[in-house]
Image 1 (cartoon, helix red, strand yellow):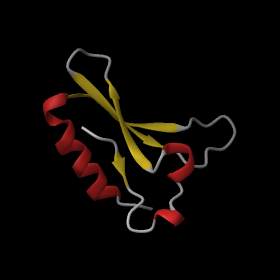
Image 2 (tube, one colour):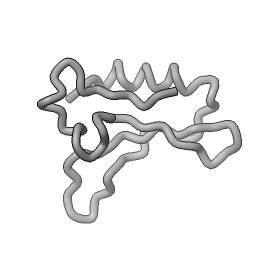
Image 3 (cartoon, helix red, strand yellow):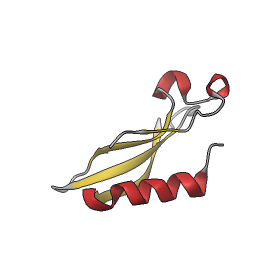
Length: 78
C-alpha cells in the first residue's frame, strides 16, 4: 500500500511537497502485530508541536486501505 499524495492536480502549491514528499497521510507499522497506523503530517508545525498528528492507530491491515480512503475523502486537500 502506498502513501497518499494529495498534491494533485497542483503540485507546485502543495504544502506537503518538500518535507513530506507530497504525502498528507502516511502509513506506518502499528504497535500490534498485523496492524498499521495512519498519521497526518503537519506541514508547518509551531514550536513544541509535533511534525505529525495521530489520525488512526492500530488498524488491521485488511481495513487500512478503506480507512485511509475515507480519511482522504473526508479531509480532502486543504
